[in-house]
Length: 256
Image 1: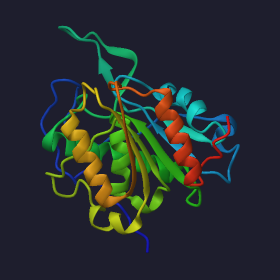
Image 2 (image 1 turned 30 degrees about the vertical axis):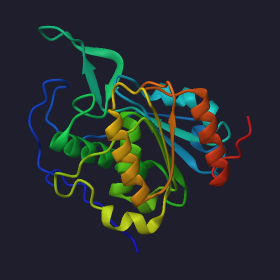
Image 3 (image 1 turned 90 degrees about the vertical axis):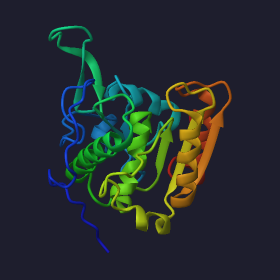
Image 4 (image 1 turned 180 degrees about the vertical axis):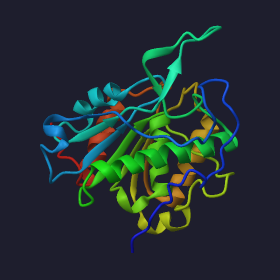
């Protein structure tokens, strides 16, 4: 059975005006910049392609550099978030070079997060539909905002994605109707998900990480790991766990 996700602008009502990033929560977005791995992302066409999603204030180069530690023999496409961060201060100081965001705040909450999560995930899923041939397996991998979106792609269009890697991610609460239209069918698909987070994370509260892990346990085939002494970041121990998990899922060879 094929499911079609609505991408119409009025599918989710717009939220309030943001005071952090110009625009309104939930406004329609479009992905316009991507960095591909060697060969335009076609050097290893029989292996899954990784869809790299960066965090707040970063860009498409961030996770592209990380892929040599995670899956060096797989292709990847690293996307740039569409919202430009602005220089702080009074007046129009212009955008910060190389600093982008998927959301209108670093970590929105409540209905603001629902609306921004749906808008950004819809933009990513639309980019995938346009640029990646349907037979190609795709594994979203993200950090922070990107990690949240990697999972939310499953709540939007789970049949398109082979597995997900969420590093220091968080989830939308589901207060706004329609922001996660695939939730009811997701559990039956048993999609593999790796969720890693630091036990000293100062951005995502520990109770949010626990709630996210509990939700993933109910809705996906979850492998969850927390890392002692790790803040809102990644480390080589986590990369090693991800590599091992990818081998077990027959996604990567694990060779370095």
